[in-house]
Length: 73
Image (cartoon, rainbow, N blue to C red):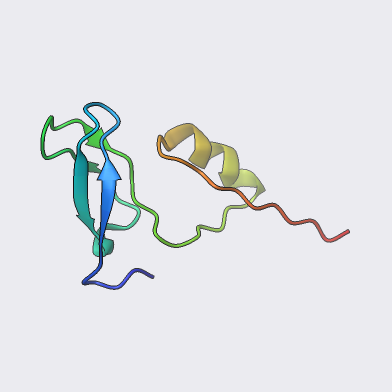
């Protein structure tokens, strides 16, 4: 989990401005400080998704995604 004092820069998809977001806001959306457009939720730690939740997450998330897949075979 992100430390409470950490901050991250999230780029606004509408205007390109960098927005400083506290680590305590992980998983929550926000508003751009410049144009007030919606910012994607910040995930500073890996998020484990299952078969049922993977497509739903990708459909609703507008930020970049790095996926790692594993199979028992």
